[in-house]
Length: 353
Image (cartoon, rainbow, N blue to C red; front, side, top):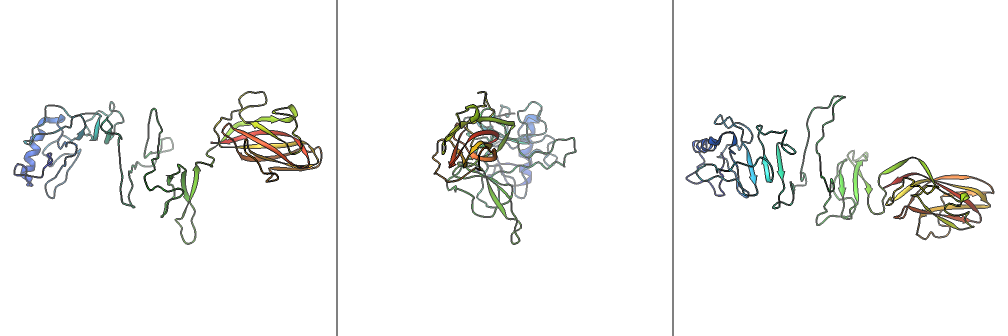
């Protein structure tokens, strides 16, 4: 069935079916432990003309033992030219470059038992690698084609990724990677990390002329907020009526608010390192006419540049929901504008990663 040497077929191993069967008979001598068709790293398995190389099944009734193909790293499992197997048994687990296991394996004791598996070793930096230059293909594909689950069953999963002490998933931009959405046609459901390490996702956006059109949505990256996390309930982090963090700001004054601390100094539930926050900001005890502007602490807000909320008159209370970026310490500033002032109250509703 296979040529286990690195050379092409010779007089010792012809393409005839009878010679192929003779070789199989010799390889089958080892019984259940023999590895029929095992190949060394860098060597080629060759079937006779018009014949298939079969793995994990019976071979035209010549052997009832499922075959096992193993490619091992230290040292490679090899056979001599006369077909006699070496005295060493094949590896039953890693390290191996590639393994196709038979039904005789004990799946209860094998780590991550699978029909085909790869175990990394010092000679192999990565466990499994797949790549293609075909634009219609995939670098690697996995699928679970089990029937739909019953209401009380787990839904089929196509891929599981596990790592004890590292990232579950890592994107490695290759030379030629671009910033922003890539050119060409795309399908909905794609996840893409660009050269700037910004993460994108494609969602359907059909048009009359292109029902399959998609739109790139930026999930996270520099200058972008990520997943929204709501606190169990809004937490008050500033109230200038109580002198926290300071008294009532003067006309066109401002305050800096640490979103990580509640009024009593305890943790608010807001961690450092968030990119943005959802707040309720209230101007109360107002005087004259004015507005407040909310931004990340530490930046300079141009005078009269924008407003997050406005009031007109004395002794009013005006509340406004505000989304704003924060600095790396989860701090914001509230700046007053116009010709009046007010006490400022800040409640945190949610944060963005």
